[in-house]
Image (cartoon, each protein chain N blue to C red):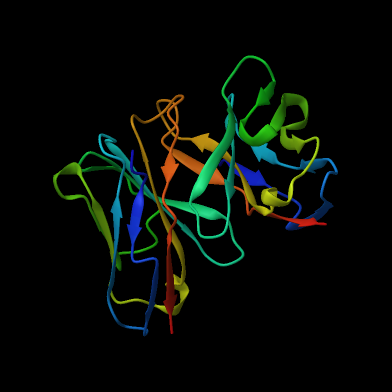
Length: 115
Length: 115
């Protein structure tokens, strides 16, 4: 069974540019989460999809971030325009169901550097 | 609000020695607690979890953790560390409505294993 995959693994962009990160969850997992780790800080929740619907987007930093999940399969996270403070590692996770005992499976992350 | 504290940023342990990584949490209700490990180039992997019942939880790779409600702690232990255990370890608490929907992480502890 393939795990959670993320693309690209690394991205280096200039301030003001646009970047789109992609996450492919484990097949059959309706729940998809985005997290971010800024260097030296904790991993922070960004948002949670259930299928194609946003269940909780309370962690999204501002309106420069747009997350989508087309058809309830893969998800994209777009940052437009990127700022220096957006640098960090963006993790995607998926789970079969929310809540309770259902483990979140994490991808390897996308390291974003904004210059 | 929920929070997790991992007071040790780095820990160095000799191979074969015992290990204890500290984790303290703040959460109003009965917490769902997790330990994840991230090896270089890998995603976060779940080591173990606590939801209820026996407060001593066994996980993969020979790890265990003990939930102590009176101390709001969930420390991770291993009796004999192997060089392959060198990684970054994250403690997390599940938070949200209807069970949990997201994970709140600590800042992580990087484990170095000396020969």
